[in-house]
Amino acid sequence: MSVKLETRGLSKAYGAFVALQPTNIQVREGEFLTLLGPSGSGKTTLLQMISGLVPPSSGQLLIDGADATHASPGDRGMGLVFQSYALFPHMSVRDNVAYGLRMRKLPKAEVNRAVEDALGMVRMQDFAHRYPNELSGGQQQRIALARCFAYRPSVILLDEPLGALDKNLREHMQLEIRRMHKELGATFIYVTHDQEEALTLSDRICLMNRARVEQLATPLELYDQPASRFAAEFIGHSNLLCGRVSEYGTLQVEGRNVALAGCGGSLPGPGEATLLVRPEAAQLTAPAQGVLAGRIEECVFLGSDIRVLVRLPSGAVFSVRCARHLHPSVGDEVGISWQPQHATFLPAQVKP
Ligand SMILES: Nc1ncnc2c1ncn2[C@@H]1O[C@H](COP(=O)(O)OP(=O)(O)O)[C@@H](O)[C@H]1O
Ligand SMILES: [Mg+2]
Image (tube, rainbow, N blue to C red; front, top):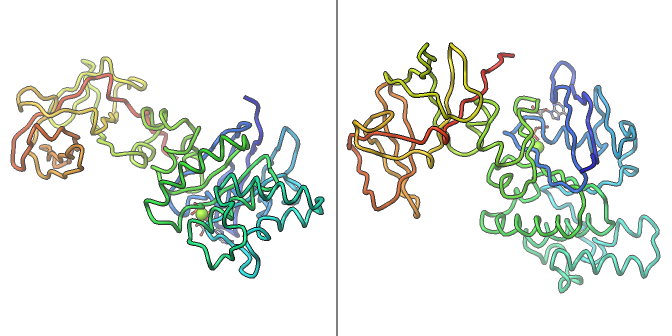
């Protein structure tokens, strides 16, 4: 797949404050890339520099291989959608969607066709004559999307576009946005702080933390092979077992020796190492049969199954997802086991 857009050492500082460290990413033609990270990690800053609305402090932006670092926003062929819908309140839905096309002085028939297409894409054909204050939040966001789609940009930038919607509507709109991405075939760069949203939508996720890229990978890779403690903890639930690797090829943790053989990730050398075990990869056993043992401290009913929190001897808590029919109960002494291939070593951390 060809590269649509590339940043080379792109960075942003406000005075002495670094909002984005020099960043190198490649976005592929037609892919759905999500910038995911906690609030303040630099997602919007990166997106705005790609859009041209914020000038970088250093580095380069390439679009289709050509330097576009200093191109004006209007010349970049990009569409933008933000959390606030920013519709013109005094214009009908149709006029809102047509606005950018009319600004481009397209022939009337072409404008009408593009508006119809865009409204169809967001399933709002029947609302063309309404005004923004006659629409729900979700409908307004659809119109904001249609306004962006109407002029068929090859890159669409979306900054937390579903942030103002309630959970059910947000989940519905996620599926809708995925459908729209397929139908449009454009490159999408989507900002969110919501990991589930990122996992649902993305071809790849660019995980950001403290003004830099932590890991850029597919959702599956990010979940199964996080490159750092931050990545392991930000995506999904995780149990991180930190211990010392013995000369016999075991990880010494919680007073036990956990075999290293067969585990995923890169097997650590002597020294400290961290093993990741996801709650759904672990099972409860009799105390003597577990790799680890402890006492059940809490059972959280999740509907389909139960999240069991087991207090280990060190005081750490290990989370296990367990079937309802096993009837775990608080106070039980239990063992915890897992298949080695379902546990992954985190790469040895390079301290910055
Ligand atoms: N115009 C600005 N002036 C000073 N600091 C800014 C400005 N814009 C953003 N920042 C800071 O840069 C950091 C990254 O911001 P932002 O990219 O908006 O984060 P995110 O979108 O991940 O929440 C934040 O600490 C923010 O306060
Ligand atoms: Mg932001």
